[in-house]
Length: 315
Image (cartoon, rainbow, N blue to C red; front, side, top):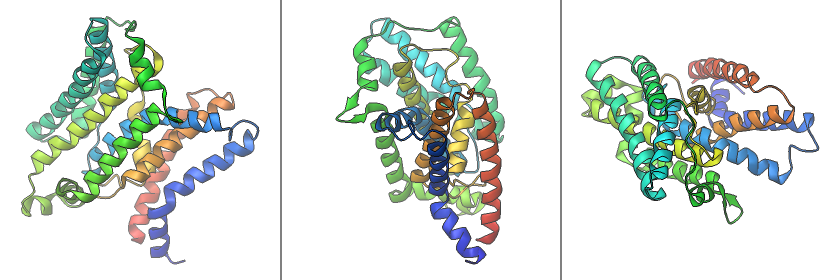
């Protein structure tokens, strides 16, 4: 297999190979428990929030940008959704207003600031990450919010048939966004922007509009993740979503999304999220402290970007 063939193979199947390798390692280390059906479902549930934030991060990275505010958007939308329900608003309206709409608004703020200032999204979202996290503490009084209706928790943590609701929600959103990226003009334009921003501009693509749309999508995904996180824990925590920007970026990059823009696939990002969930589940099963997970994530990001650069040269 020459270098070009290896590059093509890695682009198509590299993420899946990583997942198989990680599963094999944890299966060998914990053969009695890892492959139990209930644990497999648990991995899916654990991965759902990571997949949601990673789907939004995917779009930001696809245009050679980044969104470091996904974790703080997750936290603030969870807090606002919970407070609206505690105040008596119907759960559906609270989710739509405090989770979905607010996530989109915060994403639009990120996109508008990127367009207005001309600064790289890294700088803008680094700043808004701190702002949104500070607002989360202000709104919540630095205290968790709980006491919302049980039907809200049941709807987002129960099963639809035998499939857990969080898994179904993440998969449905992934299918919708896969359709957007592969079958619509919007998706083609976003890929074109990431591949060559200047060429996209001269071909008539509205760069600022598509940048705004990308960050709105990212905010929308993080808002949904915030709602789901609140339902799963039974309380909205102001510290929710910490380090989730690392997990989201890792899921997208491990999933084959090029850090240099213009290349990546939604299904691979979902597999990347499953890799993160599998690592977390396996470390917990082996009674290894969770902060080791950050070491693993950082190492995987460096390895994935290095491989992407080598594969790019081969291609």
